[in-house]
Structures are given as C-alpha cells and as structure tokens.
Image: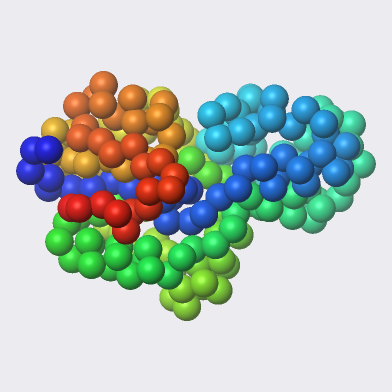
Length: 204
C-alpha cells in the first residue's frame, strides 16, 4: 500500500452493525413478502434510491411505499420496520476512530436517508455517550444530503474536489464490493471490509 494521506470511511458495517434481514423480516410481517426486490445491501429500487438521494421526503416515501405495496401501516410502523436493520455502535470502534483521526484527515461517505439518519444519531448517543457522530470526521457526507450515492462515481469525485484530495493518496474503506470497485476505478486505495473483520483488525 502506498502512503496514505487521507481516509474515507463507509458507515454501515464499518462503524455501526447492520442486519438487513431484520428489516426484511419486519416488512414481511407487514405483508411485503418480496421486500428484497425493493431493498438489500446490494440492490435498491427507484423508490429507495429516491429516498437515499433526498429526492423525496420521509412522508412521501411512506405514502409511495403504501401505494406500491398495498400495505396498510402507519408512518411509525414503517419507520420501525425500516430502522430494524440498524443495530448498535460498538464503542471500541469509535475509540479506535478517535485514535485514527489524530493521525489522518478522516471523512465519511454513507448511503443513507433521513429516517435512518435520525435513528443512528440516537443510537450513537445511546451506545457511545457522545452527542454528535459527525464530529468524529473532518466532514461527513450523506447521500440524502448530497443527492449522490455510491457506487456512482460522482459522489466520490465531489468529495475529492471539495477537499482537494488526490485519489491515489486516499484510502477508501467500505463493506460493499460495488462501492470498492468504483473507488478502485477512480484510483483510490481501498480496503473491502468483510465480516468477521472489523476496523479493529486494520493496520493503518
């Protein structure tokens, strides 16, 4: 590995534990038997992409999901099912990050949405006892705020341009192979983090 000057981290599966199956099961209980055709780690349909890129609001998402699937569930019930995949922030990973961010400029690039954002900010306070997850980074980039999402190249290019970063000097760490492949194609150094490996196993 060449000398690293900057690090861009993913969020889910890197700092927060996820279980996509919990959300799939929750929506199955609401009557959506084919939920994985809508959303999984490696696939999002147009409705979920619109939510992740901020093109629709949470309320519009709820209405469109009810219309698309025919389920009769209120907003809070849908929210709870959608958030079921968000498990916890292991505090030791944040302790590790607090050492790394003293050695390198660190950034976050996460595909997320306003519903998950509100939930994981509360989980961070619950699990770690700190107020603001974003303060762990020089800058945190979220797809629903940027209007861009991984694995599309434009989000990566935007972060490079905004911070005057060179891809060959920047390490990108993510748990999804499609995102890693885009970063590699753009010239980033990459680490594909796969379970049971965690950031605590990395030698940076």
